[in-house]
Image (cartoon, rainbow, N blue to C red; front, side):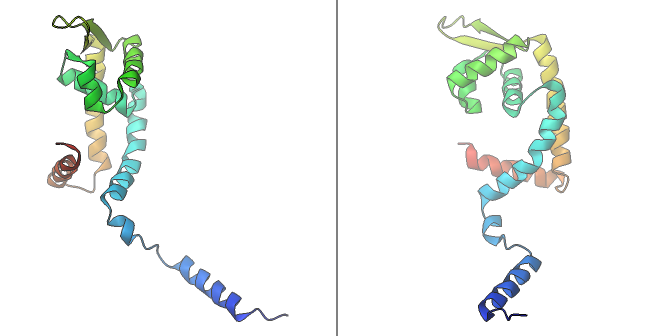
Length: 162
């Protein structure tokens, strides 16, 4: 049997030792963006699974929820609120309108713009979807108590809300 060079043996020992150690994630765990993304990765499959019965993606749900809370807003305000470009929002709205969930109507104040409102079917679906979203958030954040959940939401909002 041939003897392996010392460097190769040292490398084998180092690889074996590394395989036995937990990963050092200290740098990543100290980053807000990394932690937000990891939480998002855990929550999204639950959201997708539970919203499948409504055939709603996160952006669809956001649009319906905003229209429920803010009937008769125009597409520009909605576009700004969901951070979706006007052309992309128009496609999304077309799909929701084809499903009978919302109506576009000419603004009586400015005939060049359209306002948006949920149909009775859209209002009904949105109400059910909001309940589902609320329930799934409680499940997804089960490691937090109510006060911690509320604090987390407020802290995250400080990052993206003016």
